[in-house]
Image (cartoon, rainbow, N blue to C red; front, side, top):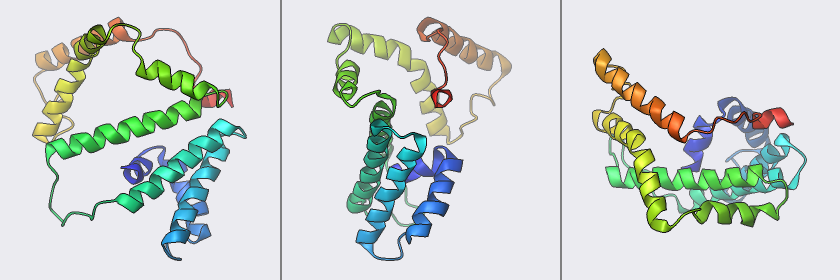
Amino acid sequence: NPQEFWHRWHISLSTWLRDYLYISMGGNRKGRLRTWLHLFLTMLLGGLWHGAAWNFLFWGAYHGIWLIAHRLFMVRAPEPGATSSAVVRAIKLAGTFHLVALGWVLFRINTINDFPILLNNLITPAFSNADWILHISFFAWPLLAIHTVQERSNDLLVVKKQPAMIRLAVYMLLLAFILLCGRVESYEFIYAQF
């Protein structure tokens, strides 16, 4: 969910936004409407912190609206010790990933007119639908397999704990996929552009 995303993403920025903006405005101590306003303004200012451009303002507003919507429609928290099913967790994870990725499109655009163009390019594959599905399936399976093993064993280091030959095979397979699919051009880190 967006709240968990912001707790884990760019922890120093998230902490600064929480401590010096959100809490300073009153946080969640002044009722629901003021809480939503504080969330929105915090994220809007967080967007402006990245630069004085419309795309950053839209990015901040997008995350503010997303956080408010999460609080509005949040299902009641489960009892302590209760866990959701793997399917529910996968849907939540995929939904959060896609909403965050959509936000990065807003972050990256040069003008607001670029947004529908970039969005269309993301949605419309460059090749036929069948080729697109095969392409994604072929290149994504190693990561999905590793994630599945990690999830089932409830151990993120499960690969590291395997015998050396199995680790070597997994690492070589991943390296091969990176070399086959990765982009080797040098790009300037986005924050270096400010």
